[in-house]
Length: 491
Image 1 (cartoon, rainbow, N blue to C red):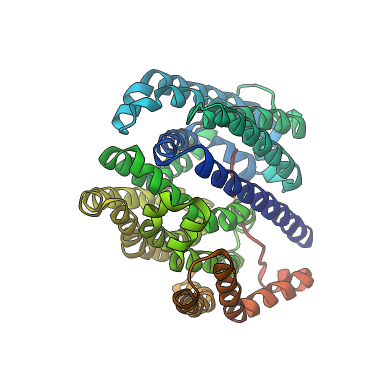
Image 2 (cartoon, rainbow, N blue to C red):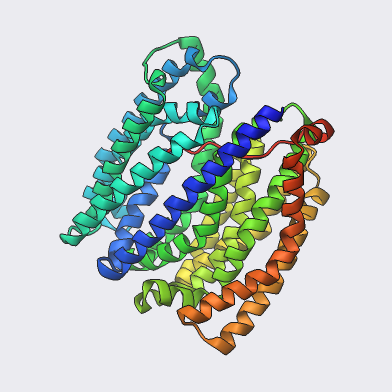
C-alpha cells in the first residue's frame, strides 16, 4: 500500500511538470502566432481541424488500450492483440476521413480546410500505434519517461509550426507541425517500451477487449462531442472567423482544466482502479481528490472570468477582444469540467455503461440549446448555453450516480466549501481592484497576487491535511485505504 502511494505521488509530480511545461509552452506559442501570423479566420480553420481530429482520437482505438491499465496480470499476454486492434481501427478511421474530408469541411462551414484535415488526421494512425506503449507507461506510473517524450513532441511541433508559419503557409503550418511532433513522440514511446510494439492476434482476447473497450470508447466519443459540439455549432452557423474568436476564448478557459485535469487524469484511472473493490476507500479518495482539484482550479477560473477583457487584450491584442464575453461564461464552465473530468474517471472504473448514458444525455440536451443560443446571441450565447446545460441539467445527474457508489452528496459538498468561498472572496476583490487600477500588465499582476493572497487561507487547511497524510502513508492507508487519484491520456 505504501509503495503504491509513493509510485502514484511520484507519477503525479512528473505529470504536473509535464502538463505545466507543455501548457505554458503552448500558451506562449499561441500568443506569438496570434500576434504575428494568424487572425481569427486562420485560427478558425485550425480549430476545425482540431475538432475533427479530437473526434477521431476519441474512437480510433475503440477503448481497448485502457485494458493495459485496468486488467490484472502480465500485459505482454494481450498487448499484441491490443496493438493490432488499435492500429487496424485507427487506419480504417483515417481512410474514412480521407475520403469524406471535402464533405466534412463543407458541413463545418470551412471547405478550405479539406487539405489540412487530410494531413492533420494522419496523427490518428500514429496514436493508434503509440497508445500501447503509453498504456504500459501509465500502468506502471512511469510519468518521467512520458514527460521526456511529450516535451520532445512539443519542441519539434513548435519549431516546425513557426518555420512554416513564417513562410506564409497559413493553417497548414499547424498540421505539419503536429504531424512532425507526433512522429517524434512515436519513436520516443517505442524506445521507452519496445516490448509493447509487437503485433499479434488472439480471437478470445480480442472479443474480451472489445467488450471492455467499446463502452468506454463510446462514452469518450460522447464526451468529445460534448466538448466540441459548440465548435460545430459556431462553425456551421457563424463561420470560421467567429469560430476563431470562440476557439481563443475556449482555449483560455481550458487553461485550468488542462493544467489540473491533465495532471490528475494521467494517474487517476489507474489509482481509482486499484480501489474499485473497496467502497469506503474509493469514496474517501474521490472526496480528497475533488477538494484538491477544485482548490487548484478555482483561482484560475475566477480570475479569467472576472478579468476576461483586459487579459485577452493584454495577451493577444485588441483584434481578439470579441472573445471576452464568451470567456467569462467559459471560465465558469471550466470549473465544472474539472470536477466532471474527475467524476468521469471515477465512474469509468465501475459504471461504464451508465457513464455512456449520462454522456449521451449531456450531448443531446446541449445541442438544441446551443443552436438556439447561437442564432439569438452569437458566440457569447453559445458559451452561456454551455454553462446552463452543464450546471442545471448535467451536474445533478453526476451527483446522483456518484451517490450510488457510496460517494454521498454531503462528501462532495464538504470538498467544495472552502474552494468556493475562497473563490467568491477573491473574485469580488479582483473586480473591485480592476475598477480602480485598470487593465495594464502591472495592474493585473498586482490584482492577481492580492486576490491569491486572500484565497490561500481558505484552502491551506486542505493542503496541510494532504501533506500530513503523505508524511504518514502507512497509518493513513491503514485507516481508510485511501490513495491518491487520477487517468490515462493518450498522445
